[in-house]
Image (cartoon, rainbow, N blue to C red; front, top):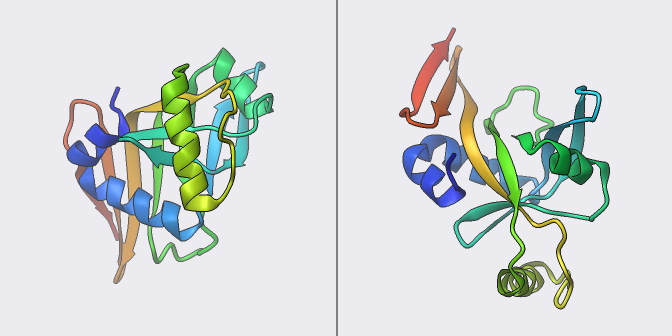
Length: 163
């Protein structure tokens, strides 16, 4: 498994597309988790990049976080409404683990406040999920073709061109 900072080094093209699309939507992504019965659940969320890590956090007690507590596997997809995918899109697959570190939480809350004005300073974060990425893909559409860039742990990025 790979943390975000390492991912940007081993899969720079996909990381760049993810970062661009993440920013373009105001950080909105779609998170896929597994329900208790094994069926998929899709939930909107705003993951954050902070201190070299991708964080999947939000309102505690929600079904998506109950899903992740039971089964840490996820897929994160950059949100798009463009049927032509002219700005590309990206997906990340991996697992999460809960990081309980009050100093980290305080730095995260301060950074969130400085960047967005949303004040969670002094709050306890349970859970506080760090993402570890195991595979990823990105799509870019060009003149008469679509390039799909794929990556898995232990491999290099590779591009599959579809006409």
